[in-house]
Image 1 (cartoon, rainbow, N blue to C red):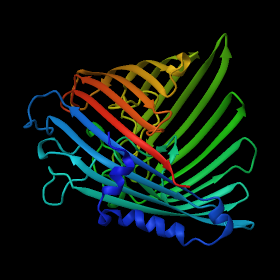
Image 2: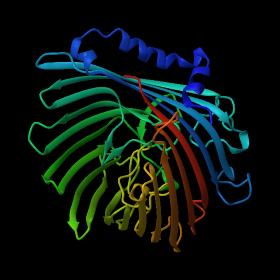
Image 3: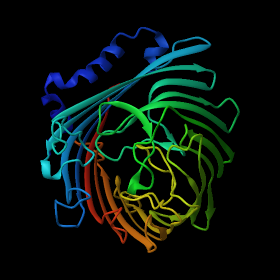
Length: 433
């Protein structure tokens, strides 16, 4: 296996425009705390993605029968410290580069690479994107504006392919009160994971649940996380996509020692309605989910339950991951009136002396789905497995190898397709300083 840094050195200089700008920004910084507390990290990520739709024909009206591509990605993350004084200022930068390693017109559009302008079946040889974020800190309050990677209950950025997507806007996070975190945000654009173009925020239309390409001028969020004690955290968040939907979230995270192990609970309630002029038509959904787990030694066994109430599926932003306990590798189990359950098993091989090796497998079954234009009850299931190893020492120390496999089946083929999927991800994280 070629070391990721060797691959990096062999790339043409012309491919590094975005990353060179990031490096120049760091070199020209002058302020004391600005430099002293700065950091630079580089991730080299190789991804092989294979998704077989099990229909055996490339002429299927829903698209090609298979997606199969391999690509190399680099993510450079530069973060400054803050200037000295009561009000501190800083600047962060993200530079991303994607390179095609293997692709064919018949098996493209995997989400790893953008399509060429002339032929949507062909993937570009390379693409790059760049984002700057200005930040200001007063006491325990930080305001950021620019490129953001939100990781919040009502907006979690997607990082499931080669490069993550980015959102653009402002975000305020304040922790002035002990054990209480407050956040507020207003976003106006995003850059998809396999794109270089900033575009309007839009509603995700998976399985044609809503009208596609419904865009909005902005997306606003507010949230409170309160740490009741060391074992219990309560959350409330509110969000609204202008003239499309509004959403409220209430969550509880708890853990408690029981016998030789630890019991954990994750309860989530999301209520969604249409907002303003309701550009995507009626939205009416209440999603309730809970995941209960028990861990002892290297073992953890979990069981989950999720129920969709209301006339529609749960809405969420395109380019984000819905905050649902039964959101898996392929499917979200968020269809109208769907009920689903999950069984999951995790094992950390550190318990038997193999540091860095972990395994998980899970199964989710969903039924009672209200299928648009049909009186038949929709049903679906998914089975996932993942094996991950992080090299602990030697030349390839900190190289991560991750093998993910998923099987998905459904009976409402007019909207969804059966899937067998394999992802192999090799990544290396280097701390430059």
